[in-house]
Length: 294
Image 1 (cartoon, helix red, strand yellow):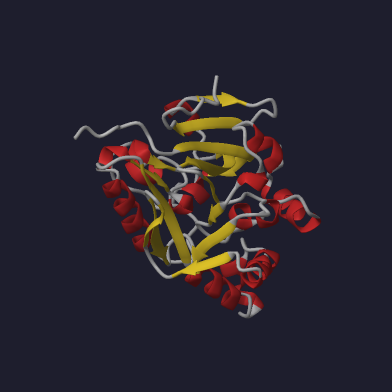
Image 2 (cartoon, helix red, strand yellow):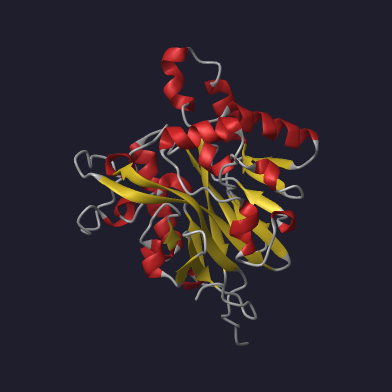
C-alpha cells in the first residue's frame, strides 16, 4: 500500500507582538555579553482532521497584562482576532488549546477562546499555585506567572473545559502527542509533537520555551554542543536532555524542532509580514489547504 505523504495538519507560527531588544543572555545560558536581539512573541495554530488547535494563547490586553507587556518591553501587540484572521479562522473556531507552560505570554489569553478545551500538565498548575504561597524572597519562581491565569484555569475546570494530564500523552488528538518535560524551563513544561506521517521525517516538534533560539540546539558557534536556555525554573541538565529528546523525535533534524521565539524561523520556512508588521510562518501545509503566506 502506498502511503499519502501529504501532511495531515497545517502548522503556522503566528507572531502577536515582539520585544525589540531582548537580552541574549536570557536566551542562551552563558551568553552574558552578547547584546540583544529582536524577539518575536508567538503562538502556533495547528489545523486539520476537523480540529483547530492552539499551542499556547499569547497574552491578553487587560490592565494587568498591559503592565506585564510594558515591564518586558513587548510592543506591537495584536489581538487574536486579527492574528488568526490571517489564516481564515477566528478564536471561536479553536476547539483545543495545548498549554506548553504557564508563563504570562503563553497562557495569558485563555478567555479569548470561548469554545476550547484546555490541556496542560497537572504539575505545571499545581507547582505554580504552590509557588504563590512561598515567601516574597522566593518570588523569582513565579515572577513570570500572573496569578489571574491560574485562577482562570480553576474557572475552566468548573466549566468542564480543563483537562489536566500527568506526563506523556499519545494521540491527545490523532497524530498529536504531548511530551512532559518537568523541572526544565518551568516546573511542568511540555512540548507538542505533530506526526504528519509514519516516519521521523514527517514529525514536527513544537518546543515551547525549552528552546528559545537555534543556538539552544546547535551550539553558540554551530558546533553541535547544545546550550540551554538562560531562564529555567528547574535544571539546565533536564532542559538539555529534553531538547535532545525533541531532536531524536525528529530523527536528528533540528530544522523540524520549532522554537516560536526564534526570529530566524521566518528565514527557514515560507513566511510573510502581515499588515500589522508581524510574521506569519508556514511550517506545514495539509493537502487541499491554501497557503497563507505570499
